[in-house]
Image (cartoon, rainbow, N blue to C red):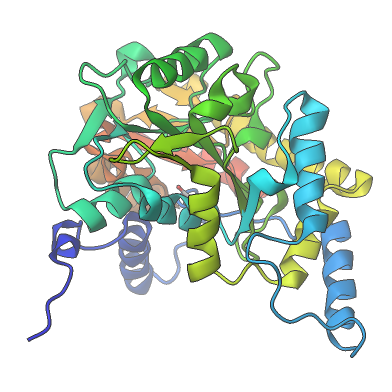
Length: 402
Ligand code: MLT
């Protein structure tokens, strides 16, 4: 009889957002009249920016002509996109990242999930709690519920930032602006982690999918703004939330050439080469049309349009913050992030609050405990709905007698 990877049996029965969708569907079937407002999964609602649409149309037309048709592209992404990323996301902001350190992917969910392919099984992996479930699940898939997975608890008293680990981890996942808590790390705090990683020869996997939402200039938008980070960190970026690509799928991973690891025999291996090898074996590159769409994000019009989209969502975050302040509920985030992390009122647990918010206010959010045990008693709202629906949700919450 063939054997399965039994580590899968140690995962929660379903992925968090699938479990939420099922509860919502069940409620909807019983109450078809309910006008449900979705502030749960961080999925965007605004259409793609006009310059992106224009670039996609043009790329589609190119695919219709013999002279301009494209088949397989480079596994790492087309040069036209990697060059724009290096120039605009990094060099113009004072960080020297070169195009061959950038690998275009089909989403940060895949990139952060797949990176485990290049990590040895003996590593001690540090993951914050609460956390974006992909980091934990992708490690449980290969290691099981192993003692090699170390949870760094992030509580209210520490502003939901992790404390330095008491035991040395080999790999540290950090996500800032943070999903789910909406908190950010300032330069000094991030520098502590970079210094720790350099000193302990640990690798930081830095998820910066929400960097476009940072308003405060003192908050670093990339880990490479911190000196030494190119020697200890891989960074993940996404076009999903800033440019509305959740349905289009495009992302990139930065694997600096200064980032080396030691083999058991004492040799040196560049992570850039390993990730390149992994991608060229298991990935045929993001579609040409999608990469042209991503390239358009870097045009002057694209930059302007994306800036407006982000500002639109941040206005929603502000509305939610104002509403919760008036309600005198405790909350975090929403200032440099599209996520607002609130403490469930009256000491309610996360799922009870989820059910009551859905049943009594017809609003879907995300229970904090779904992101880890330290999320129990908390709840995440997103700023990704429309102004109208966000305003209506805030009104419903304000008028709620609990
Ligand atoms: C979230 O809601 O946490 C994110 O949208 C999920 C994702 O980006 O995969």
